[in-house]
Length: 450
Image 1 (cartoon, rainbow, N blue to C red):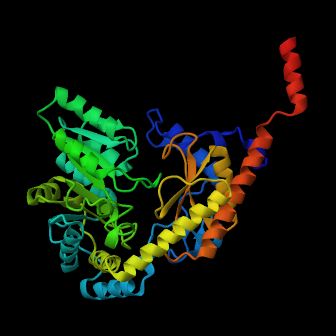
Image 2: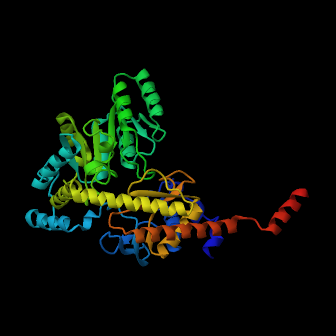
Image 3: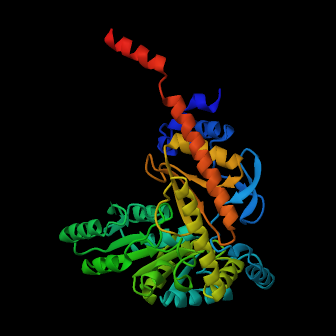
């Protein structure tokens, strides 16, 4: 059966969330229904996830699907915003660190896992963020999750922007049942929620959580206003700068630098994996007590092996480049690529979401159209990540394209041309299959009259 004949089947109508709450006594066996649905999508080319790169995440590279299909094409799905993971000086730094320190941190940061590069990195991040106390984590996820569970206790409250990353959402839910979500970027709603909480609870802590750049919508909060609201209601503000740090702002200081908020927010967490060429993450604070408390009470720090010495050295070198004139040039090129990509989509009648950044969200809407388009895009040599429910709302399916400084203008325009063509073709196919024929409409009318 061809795909166009299966548009009303679970291949197109079901989502991961439909399988997220299996029931029954067989904890392992009840995963089968999800696997069968996933496998059906995989075998028909409608599962655009878990692909593997055949080489470094450069602007042009090979990508292999889970079923083994390999394509050579243009890479708009990697989070290497300034292309630093392949920078000659970053690679040379990694080689030197491996020769000097080996491949393993060999312990948690509390138990001998720290190295000279990791201590130097803490100091460099503290200077960069104007937050004097920094704790490192082995993943960005661990930094967000660990900071929240380290600080928040069961009687405390966490109020999140509704689109906060899952590491922040899950950290909040692991720490307390008192979790609230406010509409995205709505500071008025945040004020009302804090007022409501403080009206009934003046004794316990309140943590407010937002991001410097939201990666599904490429938009930013008004941080000065949000921090003032938090101060008004004795709440603490945490800002996750995973996607903007290094890639935006003066000297790569992200939204904090752009909004003159360096050193002025209560807590900053972030990841190295978007711009700084390595896995890993951090928390930054103005308080030495907070740093030490989170290091001991935040599980991912104390119970995970420390950042590898090679990773710490790579991030340190990448941060040096980010802060240099070369870094400014790389950010300018990446911004030009983002604007060119957005403009190319606009020429085809598609308005990308949010503000210019390395993240370019391309709205599709209908999940059926998006899944068909994702299959076509991969087959035509463009690698872009499909984002569907529950990562975004129903009917807000999109491609999240991620531009790098190493993309050329020609590559950017080619990517837009292919993606637009795939969306248009998929939309026409879905419309043709779902529009009732003239004969069918006549039959329906006659049946109704009878």
